[in-house]
Image (cartoon, rainbow, N blue to C red; front, side):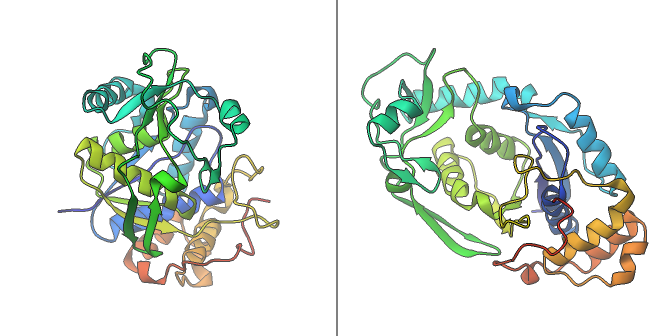
Length: 301
């Protein structure tokens, strides 16, 4: 089956160097296999959307030489699909309504895990109405969920002990990232997901949800994060600078080096399209380092 990959930025601000690394890795992995590369705007969390950020993301990707297949998918156009699959989970008794807030759980002494508070299942048998409450997936029968990552190797997580029942729809009726991304990947035919290593644990949640919905699981490749000078993940929240069109080729070359590739220094003086062409023809996913120190030049402060 031909590879179908994707890049799925959130429009909460402009792309930064860490975003560029993720876009480049997913692009090269798909194109090197002569596969399709789709673009998805993950605007499911509507309060965090910055007006005009989606169009800026599209302009940035075009300026850096990226081309994508088919129309851009917006999660905000998919809400009816998410609602449909959530209803299917309810029909199967796989999820339930919950009235517990983070504050309540904190006051009850809820333990913390790799993804935050571990939900102990307080509302599993309360039969609360869905309206006005969050919706959680029951993980009581999940046990340990694992997969083999193409960079990090075997990875597993005991969901009941490390995460608990996780949210699929918030009490304010906003669908959670976990439900949206799993449904989108299935409906778009994504069979290989390339994204940052900070989502390794989330992948175990997604695989369990895929199983509950009867979906197939894509192959996964997680890439090393880009850190700032303080050793913190480069992100919009940590004040990362937007990528600069005037330095497109230079930043692409730096991103390739972060991913363990070996472009010649002279390549940074070529057009972005030439850099991407070289990257696809010489792409070696085996060289991606599982452990990567902060880049000496992150272009992100």
